[in-house]
Amino acid sequence: IEYCQRKMEKGGGKVWEFMSMIFHDNARERLVQYLGFDAGKIGELARSVEAEGVGVKEKDMAADVEESVKNALLVGDFEAAVDCCFRNGHLSDALVLSSCGGATLWQETQKRYFQSESRSYLKIVSAVINHNLMDYVETSDVGKWGETLAVLSTYAKSEEFPTLCEALGAKLDAGGDKASACLTYLCALNIEKAVEFWTAELESAPERALGLQEFVEKVTVFSQGEEREWGEVDKLFREYADMLANQGMPEVALKYVKGKGEEVDILRERINKAIAGGAVNQQPVQQPVTQQQQQQHNPYAQQQQQ
Image 1: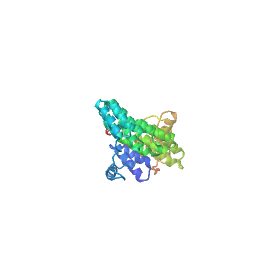
Image 2 (image 1 turned 90 degrees about the vertical axis):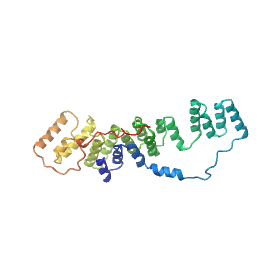
Image 3 (image 1 turned 60 degrees about the vertical axis):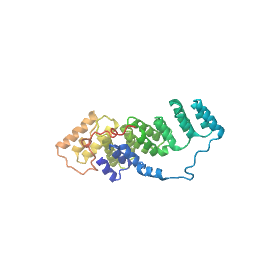
Image 4 (image 1 turned 180 degrees about the vertical axis):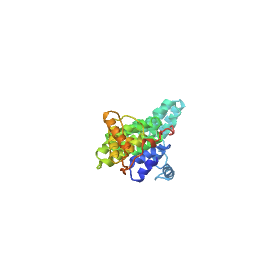
């Protein structure tokens, strides 16, 4: 976290801000706040805002409609009473009556209500009540991805949160917003997808050395020093190790020699010889955090179960 914060102070960008958040125990709360949704301010505003015509009741029910609803209730036909209310525009009455007519009628009435209303917040309510946040993601506006991510952070269960974030990332990726997609992949703890974006970013970097430095830092921090064979990523790490060795920092360089094979053995042997020979220590571009400095941590382990 401290390393991410130092990078943020140096203008490292949103990637470091997101990584800093996800390593906190209350990661999802921090994420919602970062996305611009302050719970305190929003609650205060919701309690104070009033539009014109506040307090106006739903239109009066016609006498014949009221009589029909009453008679349906007298014989216990809640389904007919609810249908009558819907057809005559009395949706709140329909919801109240359906709650007395059994679970099936209640669920069907909710579904009918959500389909008949176009207010944007009801889409959120429907997704939460029906436990269908994936459909919410798939039908969301990519231009409001931050709003969608805030909904997931607030309502998704811990075990489904990564999958939902990946789905949002895939949607953004398909829409061409790869930078935002990368951020959602970070929230999903999907290192492979994040690395794909960082690799492409490296290839277009104006200065290879600085771009390589940034790439190694991001991968090392986000992967928390996890040892794995990564193919092309290992090659980039070895390129970085070679750069450090050439700058006179063989001991540091050795930590970034990844992978197996003859080429790797040759590089490792050359660096070890440099260490044994007492190579002159020169100032590198900027020494990144090393694997030994990483602490294993599951950023979502203590998220509230919804």
